[in-house]
Length: 354
Image (cartoon, rainbow, N blue to C red; front, side, top):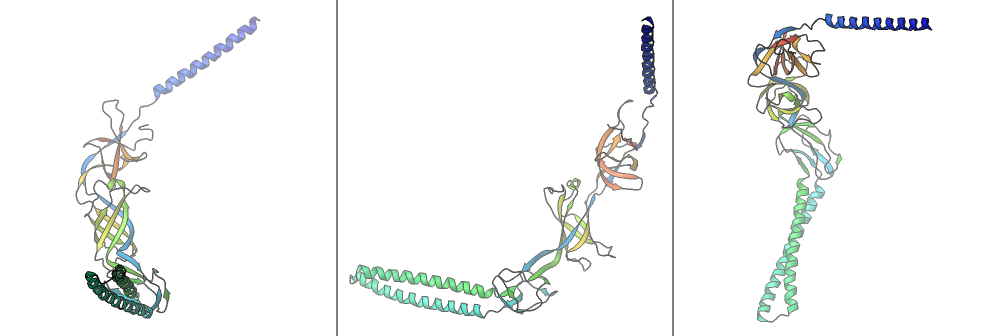
């Protein structure tokens, strides 16, 4: 029994000794841990002209599919694809023989209704004189009045039918609603068409427009009237064409959180083609305050930021969000809440700021 107690005491002492060694080792590791050494650079004040770039399709300022409002057979094509037309110019004509006959018939109906009204008014005048002399029955006097009212209603109805027939006759000729180029159309006459069926595509290429979106951070300076340069995506074309910002919508796009922008190119040269892909560079117009920091100071966690040296001896570096405005060889131009001469951490470790 005594031997067993001694063995137990020995085992317990050994366990305490091992635990003490581990505690001493851990304390030594903490004591020996070297302080985090950071390298610093400087933030320098700068001036920057903001720019942004958008891409999209260059579309005609006006574009419409044209077709007859009434059904019929196309009798004549007056233009071909690629023709330049003026506003109001006739493009195509339907076989209008039936429409002409209907208009003539409606005109004859108007003449007949007016003749009946004239006869009714003459009878009304005779009945009025007899009624004043007391020589007509009440029934005949009422009939004379009703005859005039019916005649007037008949004339109005006939004239309305004539107006419809004439409108139908006018719709036998398809006209251009604005000046432009016939982009597409049928190859030959004789085809049947229904009312509202598109036959031609008319593009007004006197101006081109591009609808795109800019980053959200451009909302502070992007506005209507700014100058822009449009670059065609056509291979070999490297010269830009002057343009302007036509419209900046006041709300961001819900899906992309980007700012909708519309660009207008007046009198575009032949290097810019309608419906072609293009790149647009928009100039901010005036310089804004900015900062130049070493490239090694910029990190993304998850947004772009830099770490600025803290106050005091033991002050930890502070994370400052920034917006990248321009990249250079060894530095970055940013905007953000920095101060001139601020020390920014170079190559900050991933643990910094956690």
